[in-house]
Length: 389
Image 1 (cartoon, helix red, strand yellow):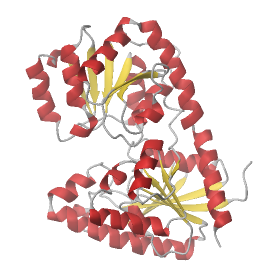
Image 2: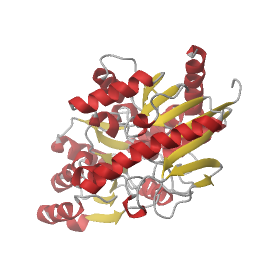
Image 3: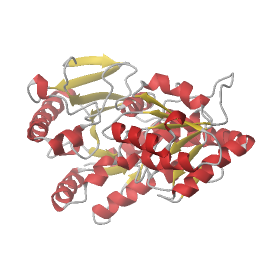
Image 4: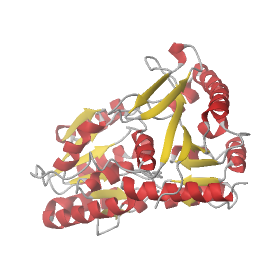
């Protein structure tokens, strides 16, 4: 049962620019899940060209702060912040401007917003914007921010954010352990994001192909798409591969597919809106996630909700998403032969894959539905407020 009504301020650099946009959609989903638990959520996010300073997106009030000339305000929403900052001085300066403007925006909202608490998503950069405010602070880490906390300066900044936080959270157990190690053993609770159960669901009329696999993700080394192309070239069965996403390695991966002689078996869809993913999940025999150190693996959750089993590396948060042999299959990280063998097994045993997909959906509903996640976060909020002076 919900307690008294609460008001929370989300601080994030990733949030949908409009209804249906996939960027940070899970943060919006959490806002809705909390709304059902008596929490009014307002969101503070950076500006970008064409976005309003204040608006409502699916009923959630969003404030956006300017931090640089409009042509420089490209760090947020596209998933390329790290690349922009590492590759150009303009990106580095824009980040410094973002941190300064974000801190000012947080102070302004806290003075007039009557919030009960602040909830940051990603300790970097959002967590650096809220230090020194009197309100209780929760920080949710999603993956890239924990990987960032490896160098000496980054660990120092991470520790400073942690010192201000009443609760440090991570979206998977693996990520919570990694964050705790970086913070010298501080407790980090596991609290996943909600999945879009209204969008990702099985179809009443099956269009599933027993020999069609799907990859969804950024086309870079960490996501492992190169390994998947090698697995395709080693396969005993003539399965095909759909690739959804874009990234810095797109051209190189195209050349690799041609070199391996599998380019005719690969369809490159490019980046797609979230609404376009569900039919592709439903049509695939399995979704393959050969990522390393994945924070959670939300793609795996979305596929599971569509009753599509997942074949993945046993790495990172994917071990929270896939139950090996029950809801999908996990293979040793980097073992391309094992990856190819597992995918061949999906083709060879379609009935087993179907049962795994059904089990995957039930597991995902129990752990990642808005109802389950909303209850978890509401309990965390209440606990933090009870401990606050």
